[in-house]
Image 1: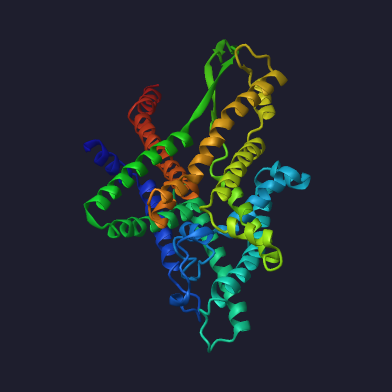
Image 2 (image 1 turned 30 degrees about the vertical axis):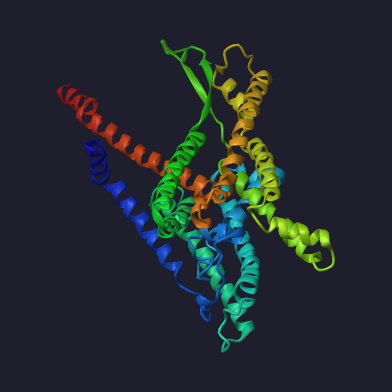
Length: 442
């Protein structure tokens, strides 16, 4: 415990790190306050409950702003959708591949295109959100003109999403870690206390109270397993050849290539959830005239049905392989090793090294994708075991993976600042001071 408080003291003793932490907290407070600003002309009490189903999951990711019809009702999700599209285009479209290889100027062009696409995606999603979630539920004041309300709300929702995107960029520049992921994480964490309190309040009698304690213990172990999955790596040994430069011997070191078991992160779950909405949307078009379409719509509208989760798990496994293939390039890694005089012991440089790395990635991606699918469907098992709908969402899925990933990344950022401070202190008190004294004597 003493070491913990010493670490906290060291964190706030570094001026730059302290300013970044305070700036991050300030931006996050602004984001949370904006999620409670309701769109003009909307009665939040008239909106239906979105605790269950797909909308419940989306509402959890947005920290409740979706169900409140707030200015940040769509949050940062349109930006994520646009980023996914642009990322796929950098793989499939040659012009985007060229921009990606142009360095800083190419990244600026891609960022600008992403922002424009975010506006278009937000306008489209805001139209559907206002029509289905607000107008059809009768949450609009009768004194407001429907057309004027639709246009003004679309503009406000788009402005709110762009402001969230700006906050995320500011957190990245002035704060700690990935700002976009930080905004999603704070939205998820903001829903956790309410869900845990509701779960505890619902307890009736000693048996139910004990069950709540068991729930928390199981959640702890689920988090531990998730952390292990996120940080698990397969290390490939690499040997660098010795080189003589200016009479000195360089190289000859033995290092490792850390290949992550879950190299795709949370993206396969996001891709799979986006596709799982399509059967419901397509089925609704023929649900009135076709019994099969009505059955499909009913099944896939319920995220707790076994059919939904089987398809969901298969899609996650498939997307894990797909996303790993487009983010990890064994050929590029083999070329970099060959260029730097490195080689894998027992493997010839060039294509054999590329094939070896590709085979290792395939072998570790399969169990990684299966574990990722299991974590994604864990909320269903938790709900069937008697856990409440709100609290069950934190037993796995996108919510848990984003929280674990962002928190680990933030801790690594803080740790890097502490190490930098430590190294600077050693240089000032050691070699640098001695060097200045020797120069003065000379």
